[in-house]
Image (cartoon, rainbow, N blue to C red; front, side, top):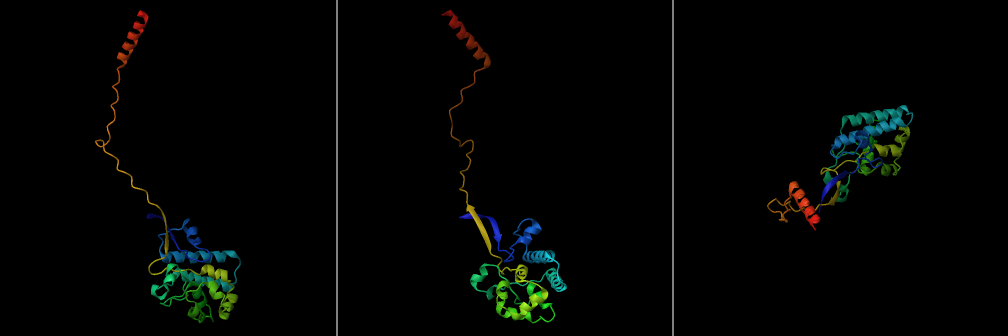
Length: 220
């Protein structure tokens, strides 16, 4: 049996993990709440994409919607009983949740004129899927949106957060061997008796004895 020394949370994103938290705090804190964790991630990815190169007006508009989305702070959640038991063991994305809340990518698409139908269409078959799985489905409307707004699958995958379940994100606890209990330190009365230290001979007595031996020597 051991005791916890380090707690690791599942990463918030499949592509970049928890880089956003490490950038924000110089570490990966374990006590940050779920909403703040997702907000920090989306803010980080938005800034990352904006800094990569010159962006078209269409892409800037989509990123403006992403900015609006994470500042609003309403993100999908999981209702645990809708998922298989093995899926509950890890964080998963969710395109639109049971309350009708869109994910970040879904929100950007929803705010794009002419594509308002697309989030619900994707959600029908890919509610809990990662973006690369959705992209590999060759959804023609999604490909059309990506081309028009100049996003690639890797960028969308970087944006897409995962969400913890109602019972909380899976935490991996590292354990170390529990130290063996040490015997109590005995009190003074319990300590074993040792032989008494011989009493010290006063300095004057030692000098007197020395001269006695010296006199005896010369008498011989």
